[in-house]
Structures are given as C-alpha cells and as structure tokens.
Image 1 (cartoon, one colour):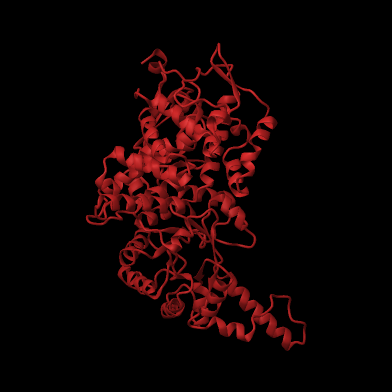
Image 2 (spheres, one colour):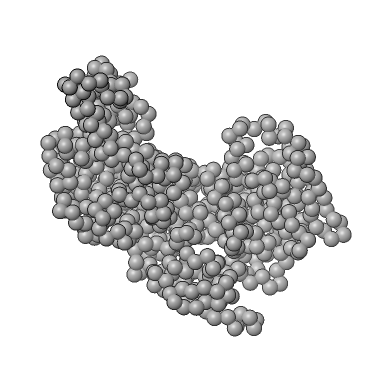
Length: 625
C-alpha cells in the first residue's frame, strides 16, 4: 500500500437509505483497480479496457460510453435473449443426455461463465461466439484487479473481433485505413471521414437498410473511425499524443465491458438461485429472481471512490476517499433491491441481465409474458364483454384485458366490492372458448382475503384460457390491504397456476395513500412471484422513470389522456400500458349521446362509424378459421 492509499479515509454504509444515496451520487464511482506495473497498451490490455469503459469513468466520458452501451443493448430485445438462453440449456441437455436440471447444478462456475457469455454473444450476433466467450472469461479474471497470464492478449483478440468493421463482415486487415508511426509505434488516422466512407460504400450498400441503421445506432460516426490492430499485436502505451484512436476503440471496449460484467455477475446470480436457501428441492424453476437478488446479491459489498468532495448521510467524503457499500446488509432491512444501482445511476443492462438469468434458469417465457419483454410497451385495451374483446382482437391488438368496472357494471353490481366474481369467471370462459387471442383478467383483489380461495379462482381462470390476471391491494373501504396478505395471495396463485402471468397492482397512487410505500410494496410483490407490477394513478414523468428503474419486473401504468404519450412512456421504461375503463366509459358516453341526439332531433354526434349488425354477429361466432 502506497502513502496515498494509506492516508485516504474509508467510509462504510450498511443501511438501505445510505447505500441507495451513495449509489445515486455521481461523485462516487466504481473504484478503478490498481494498475501499478500494468502497461495500458491501446486496444490490447486490460488496463486500457478499464480506462475505456463506462464502469470506471465519470463525467462526459461516462455519458458517452454509457450511451454506446445503451445503443448496443437497444438492438437486442430481452425476450430474444431469454429465449436464446433457454435454447442453450436445452441444447446442452440434449448433447449430454442429462435430465431437466438447472445449469448451475451440473456445471462449475468457469463453465457457467462461458455459457453466459456465449449466449449473450450469440444473441448480439457477434462473430465466433465460442472464441469470444473463452477470451472474455480470461479477461474477467483480471478485470477487477490481479495478474492473469494471457489477459492482455485476450483483450487484443476481442478488439480484433469486435470492431464495427469486423462485426460487419469486412476484412479487418484493411478496414482501419490507419497509418503507423514506426518510430513511436502509435496509431493515427490516415484518411478523412469522407474518403473512408467512399471506400466502404460498396459494403454498406450491400446491406439492408435496417441492418445498416442498427450498426449506425450502435456505433456513431466517431466510433466507426476505428484504426486496425491485428489481434496479437501489443499497442503503444496511452499517452498525451493518442487521441482519435482512443475514442474510436470505445466501440469494441464497451462491448467487451458488457460481456465481462455479464460473465461474473450473471453467472453468480444463476448459481445463487440453485444453491441459495430459497431454492425449492426438486423445483427447477426455483425462487423468484427478485427474492434471490435480495437474499443472495452477486456483489455483497460494492466499492466506490470519490472523484470530488461530497456528502452521504451527513458524512463528509473527500476526493479520493474509499466508500464501501454493504448491499447485503441493506437488503436485510429493506425489500427493494440495490443490485443494479439506484436511480438515476442504474445499470443499463439490467433488463438483459434479468432476461438472460431467467432463461438460463429455464423459467418459461409464455406468449403473454413475451409481450412485456419487447422494445415497445404492450398496449393493453380493456374489454367488458365478448363482443368488445373480439372486436379489439380483430383490430390486431396482441392481447386484450378486461375492465373490472365494465364487467361489474354490465352485471349490475358495483366495482371493487367483490360482487363480480361470477360475472368475471363467466366472461373468461366465454373468451377462452374461442382460443383466438390472449387475454388477461382483472380480478380486483381476488374477491376474497383467503389466499387459498384466490388461488382456486386463479386456477379456474387459467383453465378457462386466461393468460394473466390483475390482482390489486386496494380495498372497497378505500384502504390498502396489508402487504403480507397481498404477497400471500400472489404466492398462492403462482403455486396453483405457475403459467399464469400475475400483474400485482398497488393502489397507493390510485387511492392517494402512503405513496412513499409504493416501491417497497412492489418489491415485496416481486419477491412473492409477481410477473409484472401495476401502479394506476401514477402519471408524472419523473415518478414513472424512477419506479421503472427500481422494479425488477415489467412496470405497467394506466394511460391517461392528459399524461405522457405511449412513446414517452416507452422512453421512461414502462413495459405495459393499460387503457382500464376508458373504452367502456367512452362507449357508454357514445351510446347515450347517440340516443339523446336521435330523441331530441339533433344531428348524430361526431364519432367513429358504428359496427354493422352483421359485423357484430361475426364477432360472436364460436369458431373462426
């Protein structure tokens, strides 16, 4: 330990509030491992890699590098990664002849790391996924410190594979168009952007527009100015004269960083699922991932260093001080997971890490669940009878929900008081007989406070053909159900019907009660097994963004005409948008307006053209080709 290391102060935090505040503080960044004695050869060393990725940077370089990672991940829907991970497990079992076992049951950690990286590399369409996985595994052992033979050479090989030109199938040997100062061994740009673009034009024009647009999104112009270095060659040390190549090589650097972090963290998460105390004997699916993350976080303690003076929990932290964040201890006292950071500094690969983990754990991804793991949110229109549901499905909506208000009102009973159980189940059975579209059912609070009774209803709905249910913690007297009671209902439902998508709703914002409990309630429902969470009444953009970055399962909000648009909700991280009773109320208003206009001799109100009699008759056809 040098004098500077010995003199700096060390600050430790172990409460949820303090750890969360530290993770969100931009003045505290991940500690860069010691680099004493390491040569930071450009494009060909672990030291260079650490200096080039978002994880160990801050300020403008961090923003630029994070944007690169986000652009790369935006090309890959979590659903695709989930399914690819499931396929790799099935392929491995087929080759080995093993039974249905979790990957971590039959593999040691090194093999599991290889599987994680290879799956991600395949899903990203990277060249030579097996070679990439082997080299990433070597780099990962040195990434957070320590000397590993061959790690620098592995970085160089990865850079050679992952430059934009190499990934596009271009001959890497001639792609960079860089010249070398033979005396100093530095790489410099040799041509202008326009000259280089002209020479690459033929290759670009041979690609479909969509593929070319994807590459541009993942690698902006400055990242596409990539000098070439053959894989085994060791580049020059970083120095003040190296400029454009450093930025150009950030494109492969951020990819390597993504793969390296997935290598250890995701593998540890998958292993913890099978080995942890919450794994159920004989159950391949195991505990809900949210529960595993809370009780067995991949990193129990996170290290941060202050890049400038700051304060956490009233404690002064000087620039250069070390901060230790005991995540596992914080999780013991609070249900919300901090594994992926805290808003506004949340891991950009969180959704993909979760999808990859779930796929490797062999958790099934139903057709309805898949709609929540796509690039755009699921817009779920809510029907109140067979005709409205069939009409919506006929217009191409991927799935249809039911509205408890519409179903109850159509049956002549009030909503939210548990009086519409028979009408709800009856509608589900009518919808299920067709089998022509996916549908989810709003069951209020389950029409009972007995978890077994709620589970029985859920089982009947699943048997009728329902793909999901909405289960709320609001009560008819305007209060909120106890958290543990609602969690018990969710657990019972998932035990009775594991394939049923449970959308756990909290009414903290809908009722205007205890809104500060929202995140904690949703976290507890996730840990009970909820597949999604729903917060009707939440409409402010900042609140939606913070909650979307906090929960681990897809966030559902209720569309409001005066609130964010569908595109804005997508950008905020929302994965499902429900229309609730809006359609029913609009239809009711249109019916009354039309009737009163005819009665009073007025022109019919401006409205969509009504369905024809025959058109409605067609919607009731039991069987359709």
